[in-house]
Amino acid sequence: MASPSPELPADQQAVLRHALGLDRKKTPYRNHFCADVGHTDWAALQALVQAGLMLQRRSAISPGWIFFVTDAGRAAITEGLPA
Image (cartoon, rainbow, N blue to C red):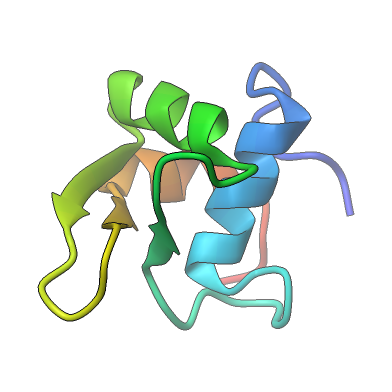
């Protein structure tokens, strides 16, 4: 598959793909990524929040944070995927 949104670094693309479930299926089926400070993807998550491609909320059910892909983030990573 061609790399969507080549302007996004590979680590940020991987985070968006994982949050949407695209690392397991061909179409998005979820929208969340759970992490806390010190997580290996923390810097990528923070960069995506700053870029407006993800939202960050404190988890109500576990320690840490839950990140959600915004419409802009979904568009950036799913461009070119089958509908």
